[in-house]
Length: 315
Length: 279
Image (cartoon, rainbow over all chains, first blue to last red; front, side, top):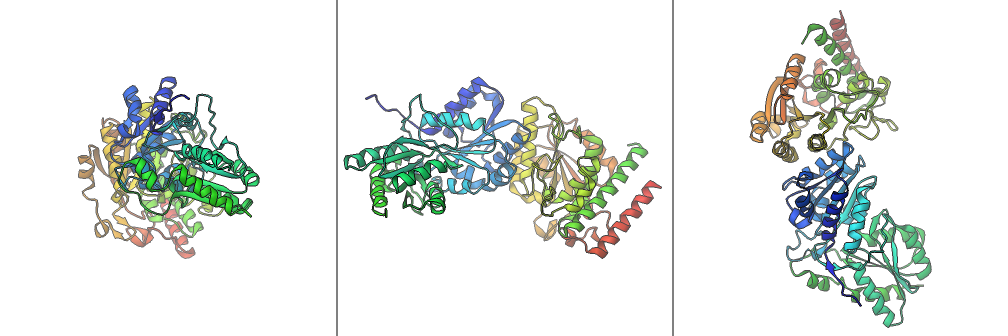
């Protein structure tokens, strides 16, 4: 077996921008003094005259991006998830969302895997916030491969796109043959006893959970739900009908995130047990990211536990 | 400015004011005071200055205007209707269900509206983005923004000001509609940003202070702005409610609609003014 590379999805974001910059000059990139961290710095270095630093003023950056888009031009703006979705929420809603402008928001350092910076920078609420904005597309890539494909798709998408990237280097699970399409979940593992729907860095954990469950004779389907909005209802309903129990796994609050979105679909259209794994209504804190993922229960073993619970709840 | 041209603008502005009153009365809500104060600036820009085409509202190289004080929508709508972007009869549907004329400007549905605004402080940033886009992509159009004097209490305005100067956006001109009143009282009573000119200058802008209800001064300032290698703030001293006697300098007409009786009085005053101008 070939060695698995570990690369942060934010690096996929930065390198995709550089690749796109080589192919086309019809877009600009903006950051709010975090280019070195968000990885838009890669683009800044390659194409300094197409990069604009807004300084530490995220609200202004988001509304400027809206203005650029309102002139019919393409723009990517980037900051940490906490500030892009949190601090600038109202600007995203009113300046970008309401006029449905083509702005790509590259939000990095999402979730508790930010690590040592602690709670003020660990955004577990961004998916919930962005989901409430009509017409917003939300993409949370699982690895570098998917991140790059998603950035490419987002730049040509009609309407605003919120992209969620992580700071932590995570295994590159998808090969060159991986296909990404906005709004489509991808079945990664077959199974009919339970379905694990995962997003972001939890996708790799879900695949490991599949193997752990298999060793116990449980066949778990695994779905990568990179696009959280618009949600792929078909793949969810199919999984509910065929496996009868669902586990959701996300590095985000269980309030308002993927688990909530999946529950909303199933409670109205095909009720089956849904057990949510995520951050349970608490703030993060400082520490090495892998330790935090252990502590907050965002690991394959935790998914296994939830899968068993979901199966036990089947009628 | 030549007397004939000035008279024509005054006539147009009077009609624009009638459209404002028409709309706000029909809506039974809205913001007449701050609409009337900036009516002359908007009239000048859309009838004299801006490179626009009402028949082609999305023309790529057009000059842009962002009404950052979005609550003055009745003024923008009346100017656009008078300029031929849409039928003036629509003004009476302001704020009504099903009307394109939303309470605050909606770029998706209203011909001629370049940016959706309403949440204060965001429009100026969007205007900055447009000016940046114009420069970056070499499209060479000018961008105008209109801000309220109360609006500049929003911190985002100063973030935008800092950025515009740093990026040398000389194609951006922002009017500050300095009517000295905001919802809760006079600017000084609430939380004054004065001295406004010194603040913008400290942020790296060129400033020009004018009577914002005088077409000669508006024209002079706009022309001067085009020669300056910096973003320009035109501090336009205006009279809130101008043109309707009982609304002038009256804080209670910031966000209230006239009843039928007061509507008649307002229209009578404006019609008399129009007749005087056209005599």
